[in-house]
Image 1 (cartoon, helix red, strand yellow):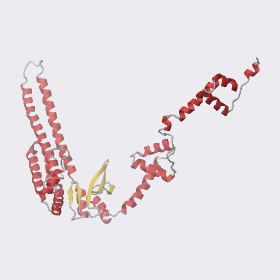
Image 2 (tube, rainbow, N blue to C red):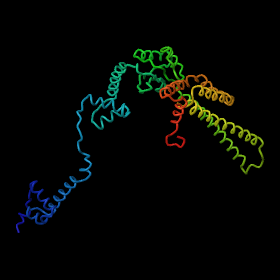
Image 3 (tube, helix red, strand yellow):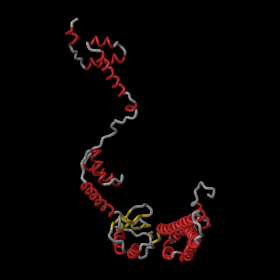
Image 4 (cartoon, rainbow, N blue to C red):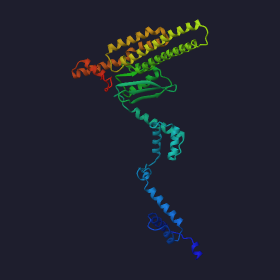
Amino acid sequence: MNLSVCATSVKLTTEDRKVMAVRALAGAELVSALAARHGVSRPLVYRQMNKARAALDEIFSPAQSDTGQDKVLFSLPVTKRWLEQVTLALTTVAHASMRGVMEFMNDLLGVSISLGTVHNIHQRAAQHAIVINDSVDLSAIRVGLHDELFQGSQPVLVGIDAASTYCDLLAAEDHRDADTWVVHLLDLKARGLNPDYTIADAGTGLRAGQKRAWSETPCHGDVFHIHQQFETLVNIWARLASGARTEREALEVRLANPRRCCQDSLLITQLAELHLREARAHQLAKDLRTLAQWLERDVLALAGPDLATRRALFDFVVDELHQREPEDPSRIGTMRIALQKQRDDLLAFAGVLDDKLTAIARAVAVPDYLVRATCLLHRKPDTSDAF
């Protein structure tokens, strides 16, 4: 036996390795025969066969062929302008922070961008947007919605078109007095804004500013804030009633302690007073809740009775508050005064609704009450038995 021949290493070409692996994998030839024919060991043949099997598994794997996760869908020409658009989209559409934009650019795109650059991109876009916004004709706005938001402690003056929700005013100011409001409203007036009426809360600066900008334009009341104020009052008294009950129960537990050998007349008297205070608090909380619901669902609801009826119901709610005012002069009194002062503004929408329903009745030649009844019907869910 020639040992020198056995010890000689055989270097196979890539094609030889592929042919050998395929034939072994297909079972076309025995592994020992392939090893002898190519002058290699059987373990080498097995290794080539396993490589071929792994390659076929990868190609025909369902995760790769069916889902196409690695398939390139499309390519984008990444320019400086495109990166600026992505920066703006991340903050305005995805609501990312400026530092979040920096992380996105670095982690996903491999682009280094500073916080100052992100800020400058937004400032340039804002200046460009101001030019576009200032060129918009506002004469088509018939109903304006005005309010004051707060960025921390800084007021932001806001104006919205009721029909389209177009924002015609968004200005951060140091003050929200009449002078500040009138400056912005006159700017809007110069761009064509001349609404039939506006809707706003009872803010004195806002209303005084509008009076100076449009002396004859009505400013209807915003019912949201008065509902919120009333709900706050109701919740306060609900907590007071709950606190009175908790205090009464704690005293009852103390008196029921079997280790107490004598009757404490002072505590018994205190318990009787707590019973009365709890009953009054619960009754007042219940009454305030009922009045708040009447105001919201019957008096200030969009679909409801005519203006004259609403005024009568509104005055009834105010009178009921006035009767309960001695129980809590500061809070209930404040609520009652707010309602009295804002009555005509809060109910102004009802006059507009009455005119529209009357116009519909005349257009289709039916009695007014049928049109209003149809309006009231749509307050109910169409799946309800009442509907």
